Image (tube, rainbow, N blue to C red; front, side, top):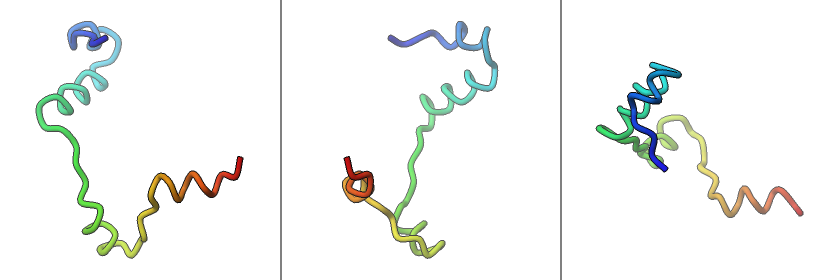
Length: 54
């Protein structure tokens, strides 16, 4: 259920600002560029989950 931003703002202005930004702009990351830039090999969810055992 979506809570109106005015109600969220009553509890936390910062959280309301973040949610508003996600609604208006959204979030994206260029994984290939970041991997190249920082020399970190991305891990898939499947590969990470396999490291957990059971």
